[in-house]
Image (cartoon, rainbow, N blue to C red):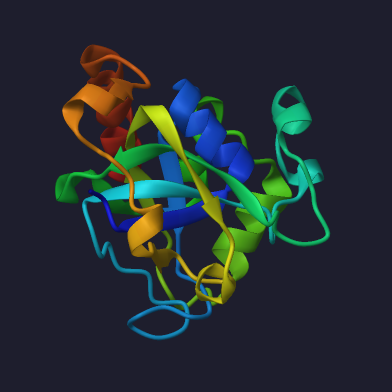
Length: 192
């Protein structure tokens, strides 16, 4: 059972699980284990925890805006629909905006969201992760609680919210060859 989750905009978790995106960007949230703005890959395997708190419909490309619901607050219950894995070699420091922009067709973000990521604490590096996503054949419904709220990357799942990540319960979002092809392209762009 998987007891850790990575929070990300709900629209992006949906795109990871549909295979339309494999990229995540991180600098870190306010309440990180290592301190504000200091993202660390705490776990290579994690549930994808959809978040609506900072999701902005007008910061995703038009073709994905219908997927980007906005709420005044996080829903009281929702489904965890999948998991992600990140191989340590598939995390890069983004060398420049130009390098990242060369991957524009691989993500759903519009320039204001990308600008915000680059401009927030500019002295800290921006990280790009290639996430291998798997859909859960049986999604896990969870109820929000005080422990899950807030601007943080990692959430420890309570025992009754842990996810069955056994092989039989997982379906890859994209095939291995396509994923490795995308990773190769990312690696080339991140060389700067």
